[in-house]
Image 1 (cartoon, one colour):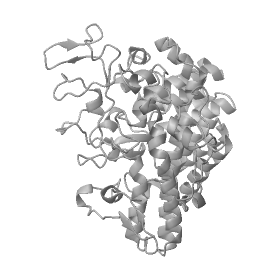
Image 2 (cartoon, rainbow, N blue to C red):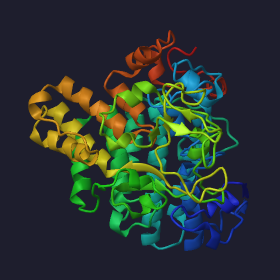
Image 3 (cartoon, helix red, strand yellow):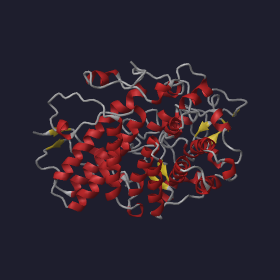
Image 4 (cartoon, rainbow, N blue to C red):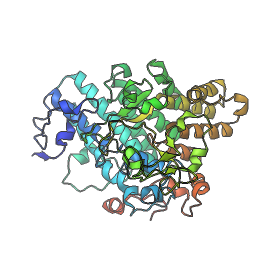
Amino acid sequence: MKIKNIFISVLTVFLIGGCTKDLVPVDYSDINPSIFPASEADIEAMVNSCYSPLRGSWWDGINSTSERGIMFCLDATTEILSGKFDIQYYGHMLNFHPTDELAVFFYDWYYNKISRMTTTIDAIEKSTVSDAVKKKAIAEVRCARGLLAYDLYDMYGPIVIAPLDVLQNPLKEAPLARLSHDEMVKFIEDDLIAAAADLPDPGATDYGRFSKGLAKMINIRLMLHEKKWDKVKALAEDIMKMNYYQIQPDYVGMWSLNGAKASKEVIWAVPCDYDGTSENQWQLMVFPSNFAPKGGWATVQSTWYFYDSFETTDIRKTMLIAEYTGTDGVTYNRSNPGTNIDLGPIPLKMDQDALRTTALSTIDIIQYRYADVLLSKAEAIANSTGPDEEAIELVNVVRRRAQIPEIKLVDYSSVSVFNDMILTERSHEYWCENGQYRSDLIRHGKFVSRCIELTQSPYADDNKVLFPFSLDRVSEGKGLFIQNPGYN
């Protein structure tokens, strides 16, 4: 029996760490499982297909910098992003429903990619390539699966994870229930631990590919989500002991044209190009049509609440553009916002791409950075044994780079005051990167109250810490798939 369309033909060969112009497309739309995979090239193609859902493609890349990307959606539920329509509006008001396309989109589109990764692991294990090739390939796929599973778990809570025996019998109807909380966490953690064991060290990893550092960083995010402070601290120390990553002095420079590639702070970034393989649309999303030298669609803004939360000298707000002179000769600012910065400044984050001649930019999409390791360890220390000088110094490393005054333990000796501070630091450090600030607000019990403070939304309630599943997914479960509370 032949299996149709398991792998994407051109995108399967997409090497997330290389130059697409040198790649030769291979068509794997018609595959005989009795002979495939048979070579290292086959394994490479299969691994690349598992990177594919994590790239920056508008159509089918979860790290797209458009409304179909996770950062856009998640930051829109916080003070970082706002807008006047679609997810940037109803997400900002915490007023999403099972019938809102972009609220349910990420699960509907990506849950089956986890199944594909599961069958890919099985195919690699059964292949005849060397054990060394198998080991590294499976580690990459497990890292991809752990990352994607974490992203969906963070948004929706426990999800359906189809077991291999079900996937191997696609013609047999088998409705599945969502995993329990403990099963979900164990599934993700097991993948990330196994991946970290067999992935290469960061210094031996090609740019854009997964490393030990990334697997441990995603695991830090999972353990923060679960408030397992001892594990957060241990994972952070593991990364620090690699003696590879370091804080880059030039914060803004990381989002220049080649900034991510040159930075040892970047743990993982999604490479972008003009070919549509992986693309950065953010300038198109945020620039008004009258922005010089090249405008955009002005689909989203930040908020003045967020802008005002920065200290005066903080360089991390450099690319929150609070004033610009349009191609019409008019200067727009807070006093004269027009319709493009009336909600808040332009949340550019990255530098302007001087080579941008299309709707796209080739500036790579940074996902995880070493600064996150330091702030995560500081939070873990404070919440396990109480704030101490080590935790304060870890925060100050990040603050010194931001060119703002250092903090002192005497002012942050209580856990609650420390947590308020670290939450603000995280928002200032990671705005418009991977959308993690939503999870930070939830962890600190401020997600709903912050929305009410910001918008006075009557729709904000504790159920909104999770997104809804679509009615189709609930129906397919035939009574086994239970909708999240508050969406029935």
